[in-house]
Amino acid sequence: MTSNSKFRPETIAAQTTRPLDPSTGAVVPPIYLSSTYARDENYQPLLKENYVRNGSPNLWQAEETIAALEKGEAALLFSSGMAGITTLFETIPQGAHVVALSVMYYNTREWLQRLEAKGRITLSLIDPNEAGALEAALKPNTDLVWIETPVNPTWDVLDIAAFAKAAHKVGAILAVDATATAAVTTQPLELGADIVFHSATKYLNGHSDILAGVLITRHVDERWKEINWLRTKSNSPLSPFECWLLQRGMRTLFVRFRQASGNALAIARHFSNHPKIERVLYPGLATHQGHAVAKKQMLDGYGGMMSMLIKADFAGAQKFCTALKVFAAATSLGGVESLAEHRKTVEGPTSTLPDNLVRLSIGIENVNDLITDIEQALGQV
Ligand SMILES: *Cc1c(COP(=O)(O)O)cnc(C)c1O
Image 1 (tube, rainbow, N blue to C red):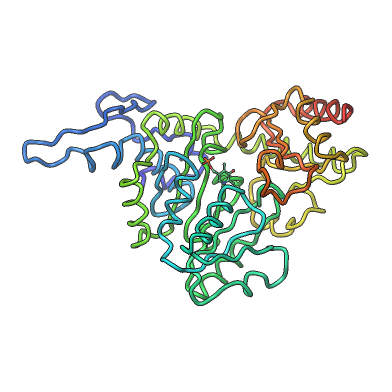
Image 2: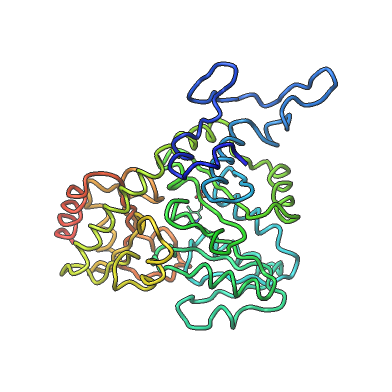
């Protein structure tokens, strides 16, 4: 565990560079681009690994920071979020059962459906808002319960502690895609989850300039060792330069996330009774599905992610996105800049989302500029 872990989260994030480089005192760490590391006179590696596919100093620094923020025993960074997710899925025993959500990040859902179609796993996709759905889906051979909270892109909030309790009863592990809570406002491991996942492409990095994923574990066990083995063999650890960029991004994680949360709450409130909007989906609104859980589980803001159901058809919702001037009509989330996306266009033919859903990733800009921009774009629909 990192020497930083005795400090509070804001300090851990801001000082991702501790301990300082002992040979130079550089406050910002050097980037170790070397792909290979020499052995000493006893033919022992000088570092704990000697080849960049197995690890690098920049990788370990970033992993220690993230493990400390999530209060896990270890973290593993991957070359993308999907690389992390699919590596975890690779550890599911042949023929075992998996429970996930009928609405969630669509690439994850499609990957699980592919494994099911190949006979690798059996799969139950549940509606978490249906009472008793999880308990009814769990089986004696359930290996993994995979959830996301808040759920992308409805932003429903799921009770992690309740999911963990139910999963553990049948001997399954609970893994939580916590991309939207950014290691700032929710601590899934403390609530009983076994593995936490982030697309570090999003809030952790925060500047929309790398692709990265991370898994964090409560305990280093056999399954975790297999994940580590798979990462090495499949050549998917994050490269040193991207680790360095990620670390730089994380230094401002808390101020970025809090500013985005504050902006999002103001925007959600402003537009919740707007004549051109059917509904605003945001966990911070008292009317939102899961607000009660959000209040006890999202302790440092409701995040920067929301969706709006525009009073428009498919084409009108697309028009809204392109009419925005401050928001960019682009996919992804969690960056300092605001983005708007017509989700059904991106998800393609398997999407079950309404035609009029626009997902907004609220950035750290001046909130009045964002509100004015949404107002003028709605005026054009
Ligand atoms: C982006 C995203 C992913 C996938 O991560 P990549 O870094 O794009 O591979 C997974 N889950 C959620 C919730 C995401 O937003």
